[in-house]
Image (cartoon, rainbow, N blue to C red; front, top):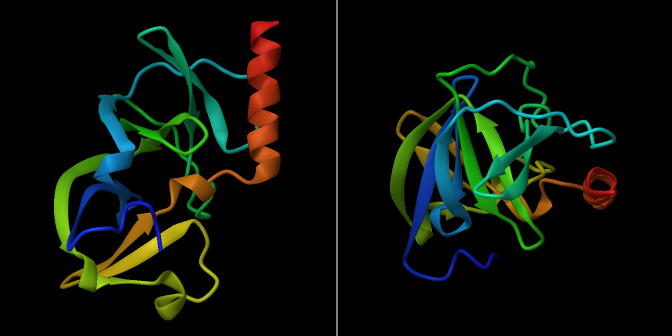
Length: 159
């Protein structure tokens, strides 16, 4: 199912967006940062709100609220950035709150189509006592066209 679902237990970084819990595999997360000033990136796809400079590396910041149809909002000092690695690049995801690391048994992870047919950008769903936990598939969060736009925006920044 994924390069992250290999053992009996999956470690997840759980975060909050608009009162809903989401997760990323711990193996894909590099660090959690407090929200910092985000510089604009001209010609970037709509999901990208700009870039940050992290120890000399320019990293695009994505507002995944847009991907899930959640209402837009201005991020402030209480929000966080989750810096994670996809198969193509490092990304920073703007999130409301990082709740910590949880361990989930592989048997508890359901394929997304079994629960919510047609949901995109999700690699698995875990039913918890108090709701669902959607595990993001970061490798599909950007469409091929958005990847191309982001690459072109970075090239324009360098040139």
